[in-house]
Length: 113
Length: 115
Image (cartoon, rainbow over all chains, first blue to last red):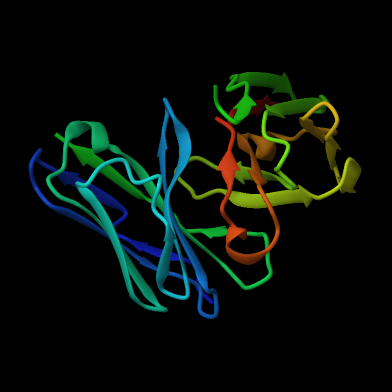
């Protein structure tokens, strides 16, 4: 398996624009997590899904953020409208049933100017 | 106050040194304790995990958990330049149901091992 795949790797956008980040989890994994990493706050859990259903979105900072998982092999994190303070590295991770280890993707480095 | 506290460093040591990385936590509900390693511009990768208090060894790495003090450590013996990375402690509140992988991370410690 190629691991967790995220796209794009880098995204530069202007303030106010919509940004969509994509993630393909490892096949067979039923948990999917979105994390955000900044120098100031470290790694923060934004939302996670189990069997495509959102379980906990308490980490989503604002209504500008939304996440979907239409099927077991794809998830999106959308920011609309984007703001400069959203600049960060966004990671997607997945884990298998009964396993504590989460496997991370390479991340999407988002810059909002 | 953050649930998990970790000194961000940076920490710089000579090759061959013993490295000690530490985290404290405030929530006694944390049951699984992990160390992730993150190389520059990469995603974190699991290095070690422990459940009970005590020590767990894997090659040059030793993870130590003291639940009574809410304190965990990672020791690296005979450190190598290839160990240069950010080390993040992480914890999970409980092992069942929907909590797998819901990791609460420390800030991460940047380690540089110079030749």
